[in-house]
Length: 378
Image 1 (cartoon, rainbow, N blue to C red):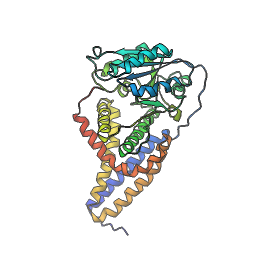
Image 2 (image 1 turned 30 degrees about the vertical axis):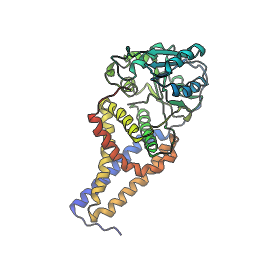
Image 3 (image 1 turned 90 degrees about the horizontal axis):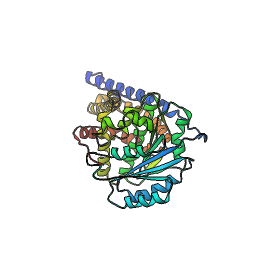
Image 4 (image 1 turned 135 degrees about the horizontal axis):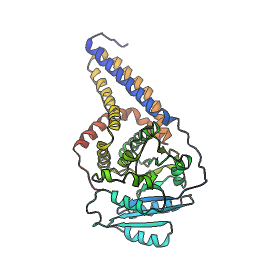
């Protein structure tokens, strides 16, 4: 039986823990409420607009062997595939030259080292690809990705046909399951990221998207002057473009499983850490209100576990603290199961209690590293 002596320090620590648990639960229920109610609709196969699928490839010869057939197999009546060879040094250039000659849907754009001399990242390559597009609807993916179905294009552009105000569509890119702890970390982090940016968009406050599965109108790209506001930053061709171009009314999401684009995780923890460091670096350039909201989630979550650990040093409050944290997990775990299920990753939800604590160290580590990190070329 739990014993509790009304010592001031115990009362303060337990009150703080309870308050932080309530903040977290209320915030997450509010954040994910619309996300969990999303119903995937069927495709209305009428009046399809032309689509330009754009892929930037920097020495991606092997990956293109898998991606190109998957793109050409898309069940969509009017699309082209623009592949930008971003100064490759393997067989990519020759492969694209031959491909362009033999496949009418393929258009190749070539970037040289000299052209990239004053540019970091892939923003120059992507800008040239968009400029070369024949269609108003732009759909982006990466060379190391594979669409989950032949209806990927159809589902990703459906919002444009349902609502004429839509100019941006955010898609999801799940990480392919493999048998490694790095893969588990990558997949769980990917689910949290996807659920968050989908939920923000559904709550009329879009803040980011992922270039592995992202669509927007060509006219919108030129309206916001492309990547001009962040051309000096190597990454951010997805996050920071959404920052500049997304509004409450012009952004939609596509959560149908057939709209997903699968991607592989990094093979080692060091590679994944490097990738996450690059992604987190961009967060410094988000809008102030988005940084405040995201920081609130991270800060209250970290304080929750710090307060719980502090309670473990006081016998009088130890049992009560354990009871509170168990209640917290019993509330959050089923909710996160539903979140993971929405993104077809329900099996991963078994790790939620473990990663709830590990995320404190994850956020602290990446927050510290991001403060002192420097941008790298892609």
